[in-house]
Length: 369
Length: 208
Image 1 (cartoon, each protein chain N blue to C red):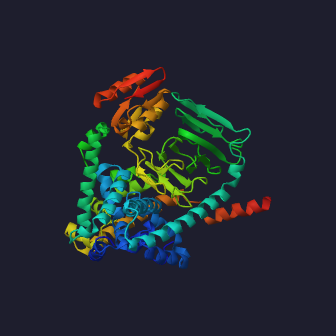
Image 2 (tube, chains in turn blue, purple):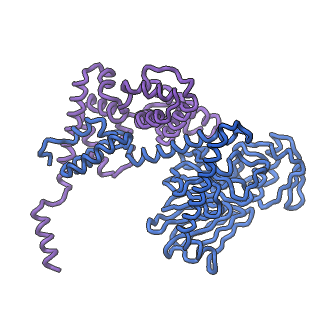
Image 3 (cartoon, chains in turn green, yellow):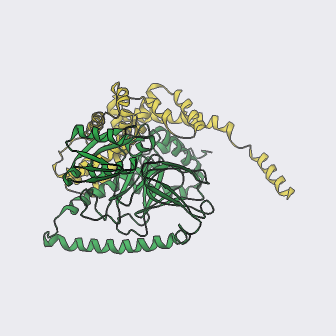
């Protein structure tokens, strides 16, 4: 094979060859790609050298590097954009013009993206939650387990509705979600599994993830436990800032976007801007695949430093009660807590132990004051 | 190449606000630092997380960065601090008790243990590991420094107190015996010899 005396060890002695394998230097990649084209008889040697390198370097492949770098670029971009968001409106005249141009460009891009998506998912929408689609609903206070014809499993959280398209598992796998659900999608590369929510569209080939898209919340979020999913802006929601070809989310991360209907002035609106999305790591014990984001699937209710009004909404869905604030200031209280099998009264009493508030109960309505 | 003299120019450019310089640092130090972190905590995702945050932190503080002689050593100590910080904040959350008690013992995984943990074709991995075990400890160590830690020959030579030429030769010979081993064991599993194949193909056409 190595009649010319050209060997794997010669290739691996060359630093630029390693950069080509991993993809860390565009010049090296260009050089060696051309070299391989010009020396087809060495192709097998190059391939073997690459394999050996990916072993010796601890299992880091070019695809791995690409995915990690993509994640870094996105995080960095968000950081660079962050100060701009907080610049007060009447800023210096010097800055305003370029920024207006950026907004104009973004608007054009979003229009194009929206149009392209609408075109792309046309068939999905035409026969969407129409005639014979199946609707499953979990009332507040209950959780429902479903198994779809393709073998995928769904756990539906309280106050959530999922609509399975009439032609599900025929050529495509479309479901429409309002609320929260945990998906274990059966792999089928030929038929991508699509989760439609008002804000985002998630394309999956087969993996495990959580989607939280309650219309009354300000944020829609999807948390990925393993594998990868592709997240697009929903065609009806133009402002999420997601790129046209979507964002590839890698494992143990979650993506958040502002809900299209979320009013800007909502008291506990998170700092997430309407035109931005963000990708952050999952919280809690991600090593054991038990992040806080999916605690609910294990029957646990977890609050990680969240304001009371958001917690109240979670309690409403979990216990099937209505909660009203008589004292609006209470909404700003923040709690860190985990509940396992406590009743709503036990939960409220536990919260009272850390902050002073009162509550009274009228059947299924709880009033905080 | 990582940690060469060019590192200082990139560092200066970063201090002057060059985005290109940050990207260059990312590419050059990705493998070495992520592997370093992975060995520390046995969790590659966490190491990638820390490396990402570390670089963004460099960008935020670019104007105030110190002048450094050796960029790689500076980044290694930043990385170490970032990972310890991450572990400590996890500790505060008391969510990782079990995991931390394991990490408290904080032993660094050996190179071979790292290689055993790689996710790849099992048969292929077994063959590679078998060949790897046949190498001398010195050969294994230098392979780690070159390909896992991603150090250039000059740095390895300095670290081990040997000449660059010797470093090069040891690595070259190690790769050679790996390759010969793989060729020998691979040959048995390969396709039948060409004449046999030709007969099969001929028969296939004759039957049609």
